[in-house]
Length: 196
Image (cartoon, rainbow, N blue to C red; front, side):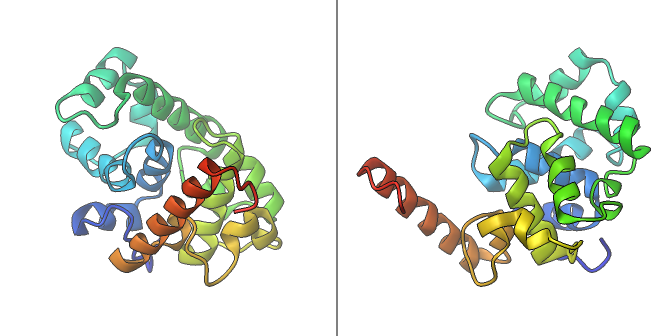
């Protein structure tokens, strides 16, 4: 990911890590639920600092689960639910090791079609249908990962000119637009408008 310049954590050091380390990006996506997205995407940098070394799927996969949970639980915790997400991140790393030879980027760089890419991402812990489509959108829009059919696999999240998800966040202004869109959706859902 040499040319990527992600702005998901909204902190230069954390975003630099996300931009150059595919495992950090996957971990940030896993953690992006039930916490502010800036927290989720800055957590990989904090995890790296707490471990005192680069993030390595093999190391994290083999780590004692209680020890990894303790790292996640250190204050400030890496997530609102640190122990559960330490387990999820370890499961992610085991899949990366077992299915992709320890190379997180191979999850997407070796996918031949958008459909295959979506299927691979949905198989990862913490990725439901919507989050998987968002990640396909992020990969296509910001990282140039565009196997045949990627836009269809991303669904609405792959469309150009939208501000619906992390796939569309490139700076603080676009973050504000994504937040406004989400607030509008919540308000519409609360009002019973399912078409919004």
